[in-house]
Amino acid sequence: MFGRRSLLFGAGASLLLPGCTAAPAPRLQATSRAAQLLAAARSQIGVTTQYDGGYTVLPFPNGDVPRVKGACTDVIVRAYRDAFSLDLQALVHADMEADFAAYPRSWGLDRPDPNIDHRRVPNLATWLRRKGAGLPIPRDAAGWRPGDIFTSLVGNRGTHIGFVSDRAGANGPLIIHNIGRGAQEEDGLIASPLTGRYRWSID
Image (cartoon, rainbow, N blue to C red):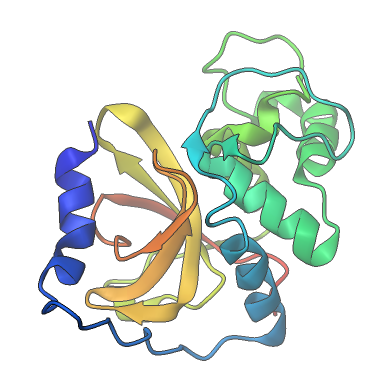
């Protein structure tokens, strides 16, 4: 499923001569809070090695699936918890309880479910918009800032979410996300149609 995408992301590395190593990606200017958030997201690389968006009964608040696995949304949730002790599970649940009708009804639910609501991209995107974090999507990759959150459409997987990194790639800033191979930092911001841009609690 991810073969072609993986080849695209790994193409740069395959051009290196034997014995050579890639130079570190240049750093982009980030606020101190954005740098702290991205460090928390980056710390998931090598820890979260599997993709698993399945329904799991979680503790509340601060519930999580085992960190070896997770969905794209879990990268976002864990980074905000680790960096700033901000619990999107509890925050999204509280807002959905206050105005459930404002959220997507794609899953046939008639009430909020704190086990899964914050792990669904449309719910996170709705919450971020309702908190005033929505921003216009830039015309090109250069318009993004480190710590921005992007949403996109990815083939038959549907909606996707991740962070814009403070490291530069060949096609703009790298992204930190989990699209099927665990948490990764790679070049891919403009690889799929972008549907949203959000900036929350990093200024």
